[in-house]
Amino acid sequence: ATPAATMVGSTIAATNGVLFKGGDVLERVRDVDAVVFDKTGTLTHGEMELTDVIAFADGRPVGDGGPSSTRDDDPPATPDGGVAVDSDVDRESSPGHAASDPETRLLRAAATAESGSEHPLGEAIVAGARDRGIEVDGPDGFENVPGHGVRAETPEGAVLVGNRALLRENGIDPEPAEETMERLEREGKTAMLVARVSPRDGDAADDEAGELLGVVATADTVRESARETVSELRERGIAVSMLTGDNERTARAVAEQVGIDPDRVRAEVLPEDKADAVEAIQADGSRAAMVGDGVNDAPALTTAYVGIAIGSGTDVAIEAADVTLMRDDPRDVLKALRVSEATIAKVR
Ligand code: ADP
Ligand code: MG
Image (cartoon, rainbow, N blue to C red; front, side, top):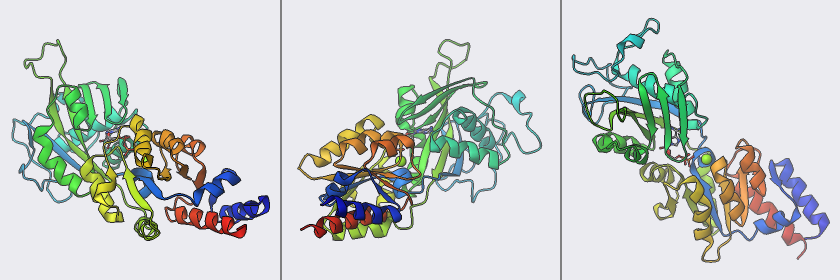
């Protein structure tokens, strides 16, 4: 394109909230034949809300133990004497409410562990706890395990919040919660396990590595225009795929909502592997636009033929990207394509 056409194109795009980092980017975008979307914060709003809190005792959900046991439609479980989800009764000094019900204790433990986390999932757990009137203290120690969850030292001992792999790595079997996890995941929710790690050489009577405290889940909503965008991209012959650190089942549920082929869903991709996943997609010579918002997405944005950042995303993602969508609207990927095509067409 001539410098003039490029300038006109960039200006038109910019007034529409699509920012190109230079004229060469504008020219490159039209050659894109694959689009890879990050899930959370890109196809979805990334505003996670706590939806389910399911306490476990002796490896089973507290209450009826049935697969439909959720916060929303169940009366608070009244545990018989044996249900000691949180053994430290002395700490229950918070005001007024039923501090001793198992859900409250589970949620307090999870929120305390996550209070040092900047991950949207952690923030949703903390916000959900506060909304329910639970006082959340900071943990004594905190360790972020990227792509897996958190491990925090709390007054009740080390608490884990995260995925199955996190528990396994700490010697705790997530299997008893599998049915509950799968049910939540089929609903497109991100389900997380909460567990307490036993002190290695403490004076605890049991030798077990830890105890499963329960499951918490968050839900996120798909952006309004995501489905329409995917369908228009596909009509243009562009292969659309999804990349996420979230689990397979949740990813597929969201992919189905937006119309992405299940074969083109890459789930449980660790942050450091996202760029490799883009490389794999481009291995057949296709030119991919990666659309993402997170710190995790930055290397993938750089690896892709074109990196596209969501405007409300992290600075790291915006810096790594070639194009920024200021309106956070996936549909603007199409706008970027159209402006690029129109600009190049002008000089041919
Ligand atoms: P995404 O690509 O969706 O942003 P991440 O790679 O950050 O996901 O995390 C992958 C998975 O690890 C999450 O779906 C969740 O199960 C678990 N996880 C990560 N961070 C946390 C956290 N702070 N609390 C609980 N679980 C977490
Ligand atoms: Mg994201």
